[in-house]
Length: 413
Image (cartoon, rainbow, N blue to C red):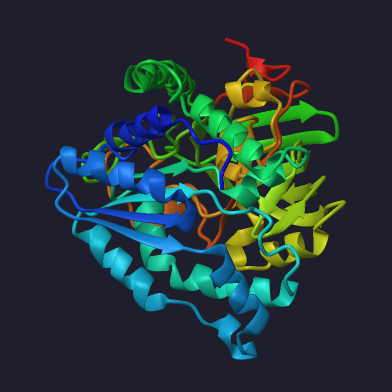
């Protein structure tokens, strides 16, 4: 039996926050939730608050780590080139009829670390292809969506290996609540205040209309050209269906779309990347004309190389994000081995698909127009951290003038 329990009041606060400000659920909307089975207490609370907000139908889809592992241990060889395309087509159809989407993160980030890497790679590729109908609606921001987290036991032990399981779960739960601003008296107001601070930063960056960003620091000399007509975003944003939501809870970033063919130089990772069960450490890549031409890692290099070969756009970047070193997640000193948290501890870039919402205007841009403006297209979108308190970032304006943006990992303005 469990010796300790997660704070039920904070579970309720996180659920209310996820519905009210996370997904921004509207009366009459349906809500689709994907979640690990362990997160059932949170999902139940989310459903309760969703129905109180006027949801018509809340549909949870659960996953289970043991069932996932059974596939990799016992399924036939040909299984790993297949995926549940029917499910993702259905999700796409649901999103096209204005169903909101929420995902609960909580599985062990290293779940597949001891499984056959070839099987993992094939399964990931099949999944990425099949997921396209759902992924496109999300990356194009056609619907309101949100991700929050739950402290799964295996994940908690990964983050706090010296604690027993119950203690680790409670400590991770507290870290999640703190990072999500669900520990305060009024999380909704806290997010309203936080969103306003992020809006001030995005407004300044949009007024500057930089042509590129220049990163300088230890082993890093990187120039990232920004897409034509790019727009900086952060915190609350309006989806194409007109609903304002906070896609990521927590979130400390402001982000935009880089130009897929105007990235040059070398950059190194400042935190480990946990990707589909593999920890990739000390990534170092060199870009030329937007494409990675050299890539290495002290751990997980083989997986990194496979990721970069996923498709034509996998070796280019689709997102650039600025996060101050003083962010609460960074200051916690915790490595979560979960991108949702770790990306909010440091500035980062993302390999692969761009967010088509990060362009000026309210247009529903076609893939051709996005590409014309410099946006990248890929079946993957993988964030990894390049920021620290040793990194300076300058903005290069349209006339070539240099404007300080970050100094020693903090906003210069």
